[in-house]
Length: 359
Image (cartoon, rainbow, N blue to C red; front, side, top):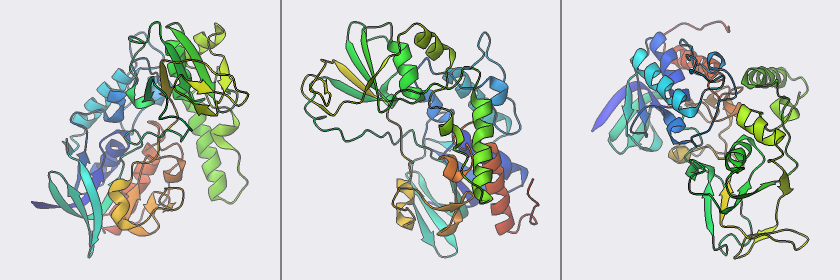
C-alpha cells in the first residue's frame, strides 16, 4: 500500500518530535515513522543510572518545559521517556510506532519512502534516526581471541550481574565515565581511555555546553576562527555520580591497550590484565543506511548539509545527528532551533508559508 504525505519524518525520538512540533504549527501535512514500538526514542534503552547533564528546565523540547523530577536535580532516562511520551500525546503528533524504514529513493518530483508497513510518497523527508542503533567499536587486534564477554554501551543496564567480576570499561567520554562510576564499587574495575580523562569544571553542565556549541557554530558560519567548542573545555560532565566516584578516587584511568589476547588487554610494554568482561563505551555513528540509495555520503560517512538540508538532495533534511546538522542538535535543548529551521525551509519550499526572516 502506498500513502502520501507532504513530509515524512523518519524517527520519533527527540529530534523527530521537535520537527513534528514545528511542522504542526506551520500546518504542514506530515507523518512520523518510528521504529520503536513505544514512545521515548533511544532513551528507553539506556543504562538505569544515566543522568542528564542539565536540570529539567534546560533539557526541554520546544513548546513544553520538562517538569522537574522529584528529588533529582538532573533527571534520569526514565523521566525523559515519560516526558517524550507526554509530549507526543500533548501535541497530537501523528507518530506511527513499530515502523521500520528500509530505504528512501528518488521518485520524480517526490521521494519514495519504503517501510515494512508499506510505502510513502513525500514531497520532503526529515531523517531523524539518531545514532543509538549504530554503535561503534574500534578494530582492536585480537578482539576475536578474548574468551570473556564483550558488550557495547547499548548492552549495559545496571551493575547487577557484574559483582565479583573483572570488568574493563573502555572510553573516556561521558558514557565511559558514567558506566565506570556505576561499576566502581562492584567487582574489580579497570577504566581505560585513549588519553587522560578531562573532567569539565563541576559548575559546567548542559546549559553552558549548549551556549558554547552555539557560539562555535556561529563563528564558523561567519568565517571567524574556530573557538574550539565544547571539546576545548573537556570531555566529561561531572554529574553527581561521576563526581562522587572521582572524588572517592575510584575513577583512575589507564592508557589504551594495544591488543587483546584470550585473557584480556595487553599494553604496549607487554603488561596485561585478566578480565571477565569488556564494555566498549566507544561511541556511535549516524544511522543513515536507509538513505544509501540517494548516494549522498562523504568519506566521513556524513551527508554534506547546508544547515539541515542535504546539499545533494534539497528535499531531504537531516536532524539531530550532531553539530553538522545544527549546533548541539543531538541534545534535547539543542534540537529545537534546527528543527524549527528545517520545518520553515520545507514549508517555504512547498509554498505553504512565505519566506520567514531568521529569528
